[in-house]
Image 1 (cartoon, rainbow, N blue to C red):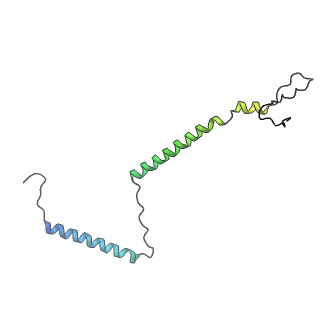
Image 2 (cartoon, rainbow, N blue to C red; image 1 turned 90 degrees about the vertical axis):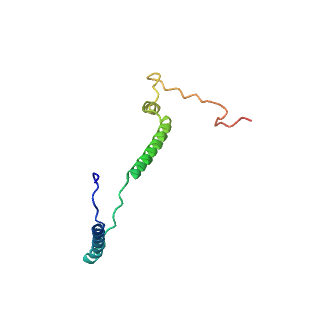
Length: 115
């Protein structure tokens, strides 16, 4: 006989298989009768494919948020510019008042046209 080959007894194998099937059927029948609480459905296991897909979706969302943030950054004033805009201009001399700012007159001035 060749190595790894053994004789099979098909009758015994079939009997064992039938006995296992009967035991399974009996255990299914006995469980609901013995307990009043219905059994909870089994939770589906997460596969690697689902995990990878969720990681990919999260990465895409993170990239989109990062791009939008970088696009909005030039529109925010710097802290040094903000402080300079809020601070009053320095006085020219201690006893004199600051001159009023010069008005710009252009195409879109707020003054009425003299026509």
